Length: 125
Image 1 (tube, one colour):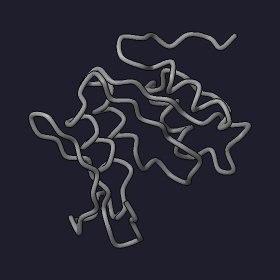
Image 2 (cartoon, one colour):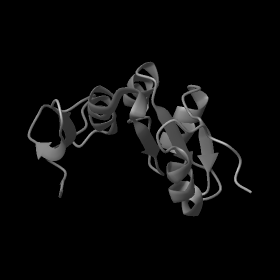
Image 3 (tube, rainbow, N blue to C red):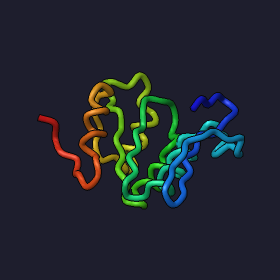
Image 4 (cartoon, rainbow, N blue to C red):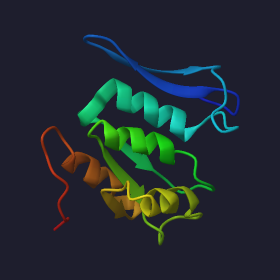
């Protein structure tokens, strides 16, 4: 999947399939691509199995989409402040109380593995 500044990224699902693609759908809060648009689609497609990661970036894009992920029972991981170049987006998610774990970028893959089906987030040993 390759998105540029004029495309939205979305995850769509059916009875037995999921597919990621890009669209020319409208901007969300003036942004295209929009983290909120992507995370809302992930929440709809995966429900409680959704795992969203919010990485370094400016502003609060993505927060409303993360709210949808949490409302559907999904999990949210944020890049921590120390490893972020700009802590805007992850910081807004943390401030909104939407983050299950805030971790260094190099540990995000570990946390995603921990979030396998039926698993709970736990401290890394």
